[in-house]
Structures are given as C-alpha cells and as structure tokens.
Amino acid sequence: MAWTKYQLFLAGLMLVTGSINTLSAKWADNLKAEGCGGSEEHSFQHPFLQAVGMFLGELSCLFAFFLLRCRASGQSDTSVDPQRPFNPLLFLPPALCDMTGTSLMYVALTMTSASSFQMLRGAVIIFTGLFSVAFLGRRLVLSQWLGILATIAGLVVVGLADLRSKNDSQHKLSEVITGDLLIIMAQIVIAVQMVLEEKFVYAHSVHPLRAVGTEGLFGFVILSLLLVPMYFIPAGSFSGNPRGVLEDALDAFCQLGRQPLIILALLGNISSIAFFNFAGISVTKELSATTRMVLDSLRVVVIWALSLTLRWEVFHPLQILGFVILLLGTALYNGLHRPLLACLSRARRPAQEGEQERLLGGSRTSINETS
View 1 (spheres, helix red, strand yellow):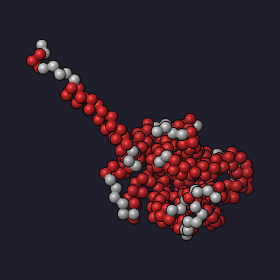
View 2 (view 1 turned 30 degrees about the horizontal axis):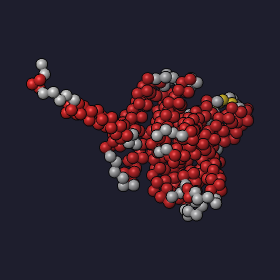
View 3 (view 1 turned 90 degrees about the vertical axis):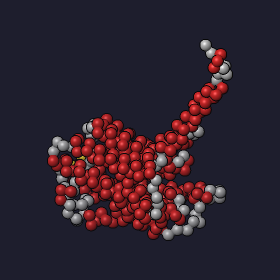
View 4 (view 1 turned 180 degrees about the horizontal axis):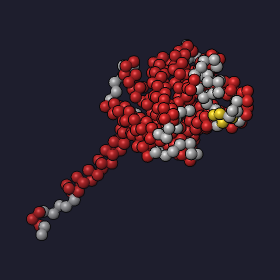
C-alpha cells in the first residue's frame, strides 16, 4: 500500500526534527562565548539548562492537545475526549525519570560525539525488555532475547569505536568513558519511565499529547526550581562553567546575550522536541509503531553524516559495524524479521507450485517414446 502525501510528510517531519534535536544540542555545546563578569570565552556547557528547554518543548505538546480538543469540540472525534478522568499526579513518577534521564544525557553529550550518543541510546531496548519481564509480567520470545543480545554486542562495538577515536589523550579518553556510561545509566532510567507510563499512565487511556505535555510541565517546573541549588553546588572538573558549580544559569544567560547563535541552537532544540513528539505520535497513528521505530533508527544515519560533514567527529569504521549490529538488534526485538520472512515464504510458494506443475504436467510423452 502506497503512502499518502500526508504520511510522507509525517515521516519526513519525524526524521528531520529528531535529527535536529540531537544536532542542535551538540551545536550549542560546541559554541563559545564570554560569560558573566568578563570571564574568558568558554564552551556553552549547560546541560541542565538545556534539559529545561527540552521540557519546555514537551510542555508545548499540552497546548497542542488543548488546541486539538477545541477543534474537536462539536465533532465526533473521541481521540481528544475532554471527559476522560485521570489523576495528573500519575505523570509525576515518569516525569521525574524523564528529568533524570534527560539531564544525564545532556551531560553525556558534552563528553561524546553526537553519532555515538544517538547509537548508545539504543540500550533502552535492553532495559525495557528486562523491566517489562520483571514488573509487567511479560514473556519475551526468542527473537526478542536475540535482539537484546545483539544490542549488547552493538553497544560494545560502539564503545570500542569511541575509545579508538579518543585515544589521543588520557583526559579525553576518561571523558568519553564517563559520557558513554552516563548514556547507559540514562537509558536505564528512561526504561523505568516507559514501564511506569505503560503501567500507570496509558492504562487510563490518556491522549499521548496530553501525557507528553503533562510530563513536560512537571519536568519544566521541578528542574527550573532545581537550578537554584545547582548554582551553589560545587562540581569541580565535572563542571563546564568557570565557577565550577553543577549548573550556572546566570553564566548561561550571559553567554546567550553575547552569542546569538546559541539562542538559535536552543530554539532549534526546543521546537524540534515539540514537532518530533507530534510527528512520532502521528506516525504511530497513521502508519505503525514499527514504522516509527525504523524512522527513529534512521536518525543515526542523518546525525552521523552531518557530524562527519561538519567535522565534529572523526570517522571510524568500527562505528559502521556497531550501527549495523544495533540495527539488527532493534529489528529482532521489534519483530521486523517476521514480515520479511513472510514475504520470502510467499515468494517461494509460487515458485515451488510452478515447479511442481512443470514436473507433473509439463511433458505427457511416454518414457518409451523418447529417443
């Protein structure tokens, strides 16, 4: 069945905005500007402030939901039914997980390349599968266990590629190891978030835009308040700001005033989050969750290609092997091999039937008549 123009638009929107999300965050990390009090020019490394911006993008999904509900009023569109009761506090536990996982990932992005960052996010499959067995009582089939094993192998290969590409100094080597570990830790937290969402939130038939937006509201408010104590918590070499604290929001705003490109990068990150969530939900509704997964995997290719073009990272052939293994693991876990095997079996069946027809009815001359 051919895709409609609207479906192609949604698929393209998801791929583009998903790629912009990671690339804009990495672009902001690479930009430099002077801070407050005449401090020297330094990189814009403010991961927690960037996480606040990400939640602002998620919060915009809540406004989109209410706009859809207003448009649906008076129509028979039950997908945005305003009468569905739910307790907003159900969103608090997954929002806290989202806040923790997102903050860890933005910290890790300052330490590793954008392509490795995107590839290592595939680790969420491992922990989602294990947690669904432990807490949701699910049983994984053989292909899903093989997908988890393939994903683990792919993560090892990507990690080795990172080590090979960052072996020029011990400081960079320690940074990339820390960054990779933080990404894995973030995927554990995000897997818990996904299990909580399925167990408590989506069990109440809450509209996905409303779920994302409400989590964004909790994350935005809580993390914005946490920026105040972070301003006074020393972080030593772990910090990327001149004061050496966990997060210096004032320094970030001073850099924003001195380098408009940072503002552009942050706006790109915030808006891409909003459109990416909308496009992802729409792709699942219009096409399938499998299509959404495939498009999400293709983001790695786009991010990798642009990162190499912009010379943000150095090419390493091990990354290709790691990406292929990760893609195989994702495909096995999500059952992409089933339609492929079904197509192969359907293609083989007519060939076998044709060959049987030739054997039974192709030549009707008696063996004794042949010479």
